Length: 279
Image (cartoon, one colour):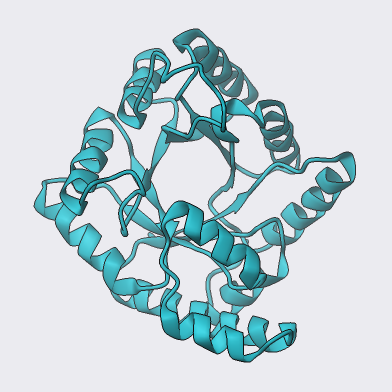
């Protein structure tokens, strides 16, 4: 069985929240396994994340809230887990997270994602399906890929069910990472994270911050389009469709689309790939 899911980030305003509900309705017709909802550094979007989770649940879709642990106490994390349990949430994306700039609270009682996964299992047993992050090109703070694989395996051993990767534009890095993980004795599914190419300036900014490499040939081709947003979008759709096909043909167990709270880019990729629709 292949796994296809879609990610949102919480809207900052009531108008944005209403727009996001409409996007969720449109993307819900595709039949994703679940929608995930991001969580700001140090819990900075906690209330908005919770609001978005409730909105998606109210629309009748399965939702996986992101939950980061760094800087928070076990009591704070536990209370949020208990709330999600009471709402009927059955899936959590468990992350270490980043401290927001200038925050001096320290690492907290759960300093690593593996600690969070273990804590979720201790508190709620097997109620939650737990997704964790994977970094095929290595996390910006990892000294090397061997360390990256070691930390990933620790999360799996702590009780994670599957993983979603940071986005990337080179299929070989994904397959190499999975080979390394399998060689280390870890067999949980690793779902590629897919970022549509739409607003290229924003994509460059995101990528520089998270360590995702945009190949030089893509940068050069986009630069040649200048301000022609239609050509950039068409080119981006072709590039990402081809990447998705490479991944699925190579054995990837599914795809996780970073929607950027837009319906059209994910809808286009879904259609191009001939992915199954909601029944």
